[in-house]
Image 1 (cartoon, rainbow, N blue to C red):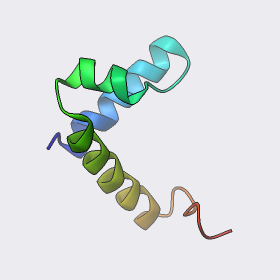
Image 2 (spheres, rainbow, N blue to C red):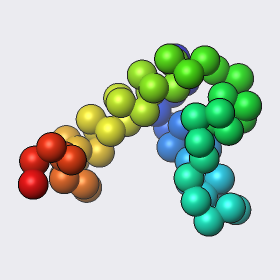
Image 3 (tube, rainbow, N blue to C red):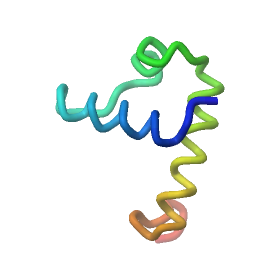
Image 4 (cartoon, helix red, strand yellow):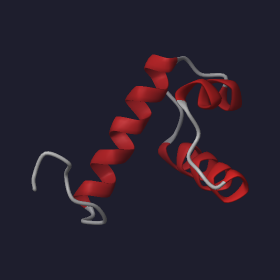
Length: 61
């Protein structure tokens, strides 16, 4: 699994350069990781961000 910090850095750099977040296919190319590994990492990162209160959980409106 890719580290949360490494994934966050890739997301930040890509969005800064391109003006939008990368697709899963683009993340697979950039990281060399499988879609399932990326989904696991993105879910873990989402939990950390929600826990820190930076974004609201999408199911809690």
